[in-house]
Length: 170
Image (cartoon, rainbow, N blue to C red):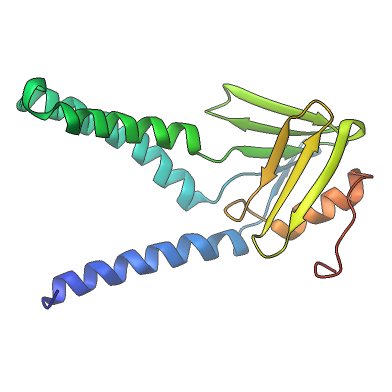
């Protein structure tokens, strides 16, 4: 690790992680047709989408050039990482005056919790997340990589009667 190129690579990786983590603090939610939209930060969306397509692309290239019999474990690893990126990608949270909706997996999975069906709201200032649990067991989590934490908290105060702000959040 003595070459300048390796130090530049390490520095760029550290900068990228710091940038994505701080990006969630600076981005704001958008309002469209009376709906507040809280997507994951742009860096996370780019990272996961590149992980999905990149893993599939690399697996197909390995299978075409070197054959499946010798490198089946690499193909399996690439496909598994693509599936993991797809499954673990944070969803976009939408708040309306009637409900809270999370869309994941490019819109294929939707979770909706009406405000009157909210069982409880858990907030963790240390982990920077809000978890809303419905009476049917569905839960939606606004995590540290979603945009506009303060705007989400204000919307919960406005629409959700079960939300009680803790002393550390006020």
